[in-house]
Image (cartoon, rainbow, N blue to C red; front, side):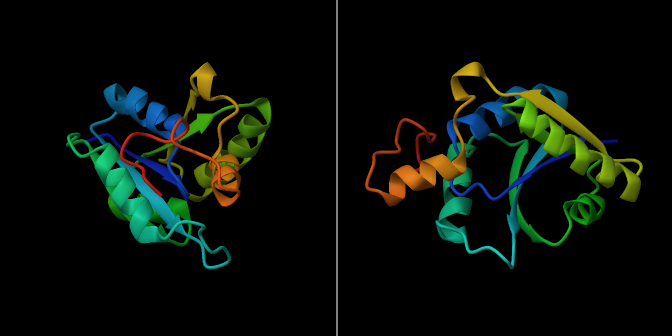
Length: 152
C-alpha cells in the first residue's frame, strides 16, 4: 500500500519554509499531495491560479509531488484521496499546540489518519506566508523568502 501524505495549506504564497518541509519529507512517503485549501471565508491575496502555478514550477521535476486544490475538511479530503498521513511543519511551540489540537480532532474523525510533524529548518523559523504577503503588499522584495520560480 502506498504511503500518501497531504500537506495542506493556503500557500499564499508558498515560502522557502514550505519547500524545505516538503523536500525533507520526501523520503518518508511515496506521494506528497500539496493540497491548497479553498476557504470560502477567506479571499486569497494571490490568485489561486498563481499559487498552483508557482508550486508546480517549484516541484516540476519531482514525480512524487502532486498539487491539488480542495474545499471542506482536510480530514475528508484525506479520506477521499486515500491519504493516511497529514504533513505539517512546525516553527514554534505555539504552532505545535495549535497543530496538536487539530491533529487530535482529525484522529477522532478518521482514526487511521496520522499527523506527522517536521520541525522547520532554523533559518525559516521566523518565515510565514502572512509576513511575506505584508512585505509584498508594501512594495518590498520577497524573492529571498520564496522559492525560485515564484514571481508575483
